[in-house]
Image (cartoon, rainbow, N blue to C red):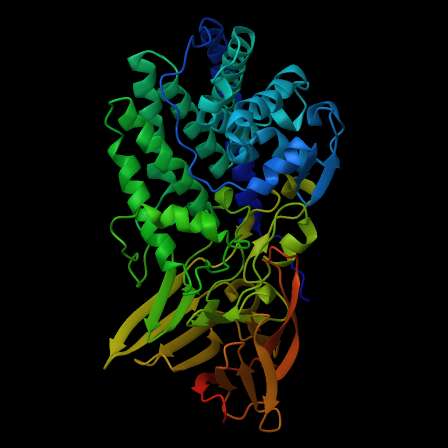
Length: 570
């Protein structure tokens, strides 16, 4: 695997990011001082006017576990019996974050009628009494924002039949979390954390009896942030499909809360919601799952269904090139989704992948070609492995990714996980001829290190029964003549697909669990079957297979391949 020292452009990019971050923090310290003074003068709300409805699904099994004192988060469990989970040492930081953000509190609604308020109130009161010091994960900005949203949405069951002491303690806790949210907004935050903070602040302003001026400011700030983070085609600026689901499930209740207060929601809220729902449809396979690009983990089918349930348009975002960079072809019952975009801006790229020109392909509700995907941050090594070009169905040169990720040492550690260099140009062409659809795209991610451009041509027949492709490498304009380098074109297969060599290793027969068969060929070029893994799986990493075309670069390297539906008996 080739290793390259940082270029002067990469060093300059890192230095610029650190300087911007330092200035933002200095500015935040000044703002935070004023903010603290202003917040001290504000009193806790005396009552709540409305409550945003949490539309996420609930699980009766979970509430039975909570009542027995069993809590499972981040893959780890804690059995506290009759004691409080907040008085115990958490088994991991991930567990503590999940416990203290109270997103799980909605499941308590599944308890028998008379027990709902009692169970919910006891758990929340335990937290309010055992609140940890300032270094606790419970007080991290994102955890605080999610907890504030959860407390507000579950406030009807928490306050029903509550005595005055709990009532006051709860409202005081809301005020404390709101103050922390406001102070956190004075400091630089990751994109989705900042949006969560702003959503929580807007929800609090709607639910509590704040002044019209404060409510207006909260709405304006939300509108501004949505305009910055939700692109014109509905893609999130991080390019992570999963973020869109979470944002939609927060925006819909907030929109309803504006209406419940008799206030017209900011027009940007409804517009952003419509756009991101259309983009979710663009990135969804026929089996209901989202394509595995740029930090996307296993799809929560119930959450995705809810995010799209109130979409009155039922439209797809445009299939052609758009700001988000994703492209889609659909014919018959086949769907192809390709990443034809640039990496996100550096500060928004902490979960982005080096998967430019990678694609996924489905036939009906069977995914055939996939990417390896991502997992949660409890498995950091696996998560980072899923970001590499080798974990995507695209071309890789000399075991080197098309984008460079910041390392965990030196100055790079301050921007760790971010993409510090990658493709700077992606040229895309989309056309249709006699019902057949074609995509063509070229990226320059390998130009600096190897002087080569990667071009991928894809064509889907009008009946969806044949996918043709061609991958080529050619010298970048003005680039040096590169030496012969090894390359691999990878096609990761879904674990439910059985791959069988055919024609003496010059073809691969793909058999699905539905009795369908496809034949993969590359013009007689030898094909290899190698081990792979589906990282984005709720059941843990699942072993699977990948088809690999290998070779060495030359003046021009060109490989054509095809995937053709065959009858199950042929």
